[in-house]
Length: 64
Image (tube, helix red, strand yellow):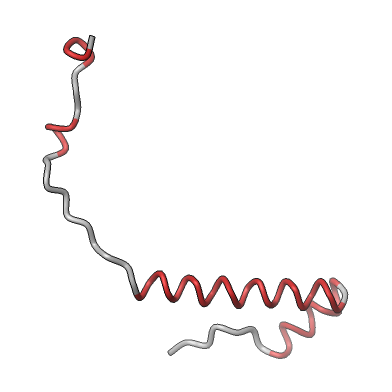
């Protein structure tokens, strides 16, 4: 399983560049987003269309 957290060096750089509180907040946000993306990828469902695409389109002349 891939690592979803940021490395120590990345977290440290964020805190140095943005300040401790902001750097920690950004790092935490990135980690939560990575975990959410992994969850979405695990639970992804492929959808098969039942109705052909042509049948769903209503010509403008008939819609009026």
